[in-house]
Length: 118
Image (tube, rainbow, N blue to C red):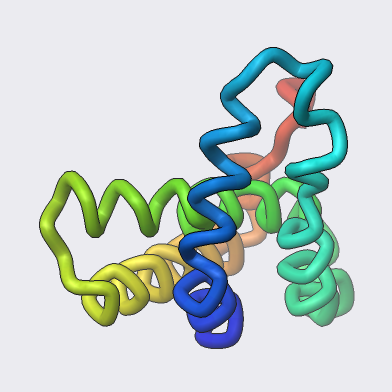
């Protein structure tokens, strides 16, 4: 998450532009937002497949990405008034909280699953 936060801050102007364009009609922006960060996060979480086999690693990666991407950074800086450093710290802590929730008790792993049958 430290590297991901650094990436978001380094490329913030470009990521803001990409986000802005992604809000346009789909035909104009098909290739802009490809969801690479989910794969990066899922890769970082891959040891959980051994240590917490009931956890849905993909769903956890999506949950973490939803709370730590450029969208969150923009909201924390522009709306909440956080400095970029405070925003980066916040998204890192959020990711850790999601990870802790998913690994605290294997019986609770279903809370971060995407399917409702879990």
